[in-house]
Image 1 (cartoon, rainbow, N blue to C red):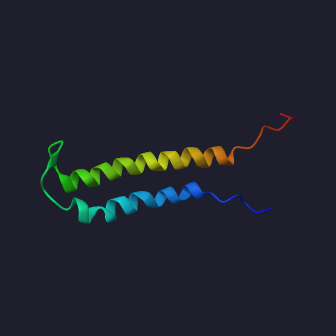
Image 2 (image 1 turned 90 degrees about the vertical axis):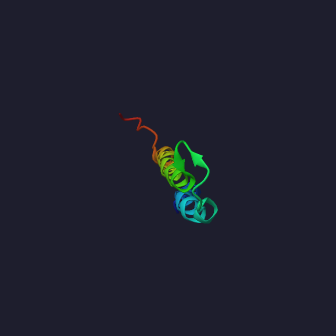
Amino acid sequence: MSPRPRIYRWLAALPAVGMLGGLTFANRVRPFVLGLPFLLFWIVAWVVASSAIMGVIFVLDRADHEEPASPNE
């Protein structure tokens, strides 16, 4: 029996794509967002988003690995 594919693990690539792929878009000093230059805000926002995305992957992966309780216990 082959294991089920876990497509949601591809979400882990999203932070890298967002942080590195968006640098050409975000490469400017103005406007200031929360007192930070836009590029720095972009990077900080993706660091926070990365934590949230990894949390979602953790919850989905944990739910996928839960096994039903044994009737003997």
